[in-house]
Image (cartoon, rainbow, N blue to C red; front, top):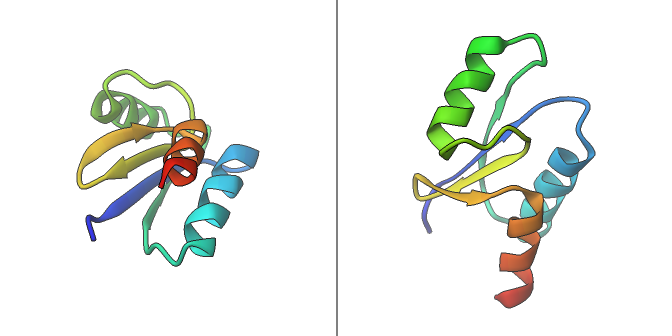
Length: 78
């Protein structure tokens, strides 16, 4: 299985939903928690994701999948 990395912030309902979905499916993931005050962390996450400004950011095998909406869609499609 390709490694899953999840950039999150708190509080963030979509981040919580993404983590819950991955846990429900027994998919291990690394969580990188970025505080709202961490400007450099947000900048690096945005660069890595190709410009996303929202959380969560879901990476699978080092490639951006998207946020919670894209994760849920991928789950529904199998």
